[in-house]
Length: 115
Length: 112
Image (cartoon, rainbow over all chains, first blue to last red; front, top):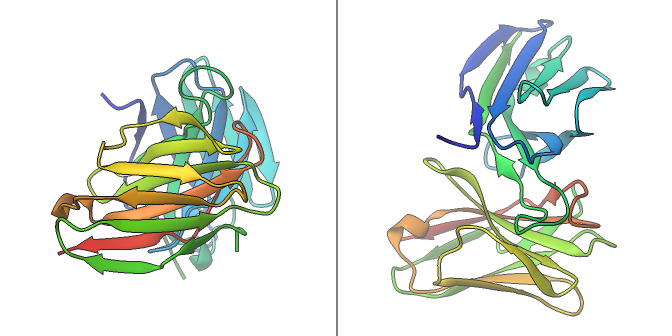
């Protein structure tokens, strides 16, 4: 079983829709949670960075972390065709221990927003 | 543009050869990470350096090695290349080990 599970999709939505992307994880040591966006053949771009449980909002993006359920989500409001990309969740245990700053990624969800 | 630079963008080589990938972190960042991305394995952590010292290691093959130089740039050396080493190799940097990591554009390695 993988430490981080993410539904690969693909997910296809109309422009303006609310998109919900999710990951579950098994390692209770994870404390830092990130969402990256990756366009084809490009480097991952950091969208959201959160520590521990709670919500964080940045423009059209909202990240939620529920450590008790080991479940994180990313919501995209008013989705645009330019949001079409692969979305990757990532997690780390933070400083200390042998994993230090290592990020563990989900497999990525392919999102297409059609006009 | 994340501020992380990687060279070369593309690399085509033959099995058994050795290549070096180079990464320059964002200005001010002390930590450098290397990741491998393939279709079947996804993004996998290879190794991390902080201010010149190795800090964490993932499932990095013995044929692979890396180092971080005093000017903080890093190099990933891949030797005795196999077909299965064909992948995208990304470098990321952060100010400290548990801060946000910013990724470079990657090096696409093709082993023929």
